[in-house]
Length: 90
Image 1 (cartoon, rainbow, N blue to C red):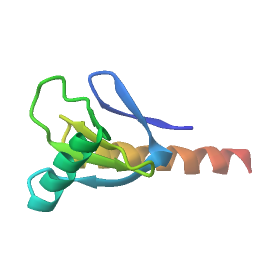
Image 2 (spheres, rainbow, N blue to C red; image 1 turned 90 degrees about the vertical axis):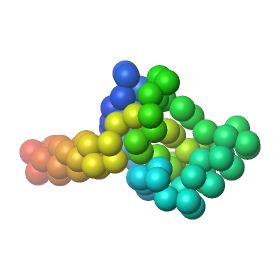
Image 3 (cartoon, rainbow, N blue to C red; image 1 turned 180 degrees about the horizontal axis):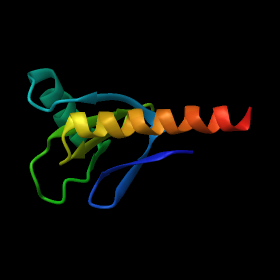
Image 4 (spheres, one colour; image 1 turned 45 degrees about the vertical axis):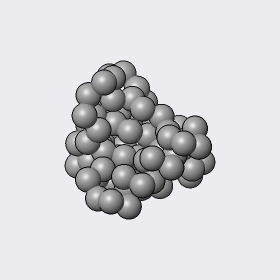
């Protein structure tokens, strides 16, 4: 199981991530508010501005202070490490 850092020592399982989104659009703002109302929001911003929204396969919405592009790069790097490990095993 691979984990990615989403800021301030918080980690998320890379296998559980369904989508990454920018929090500026109206539909994502509604999604954040609905998830807060339902108790599905996990805020790991430590009081800072939300810069990315991570949606998981368990319908949790994780709010992070790290840029969306940075998290996407970390996900890509974890995928490349998986491919490298598979090549080493063969």
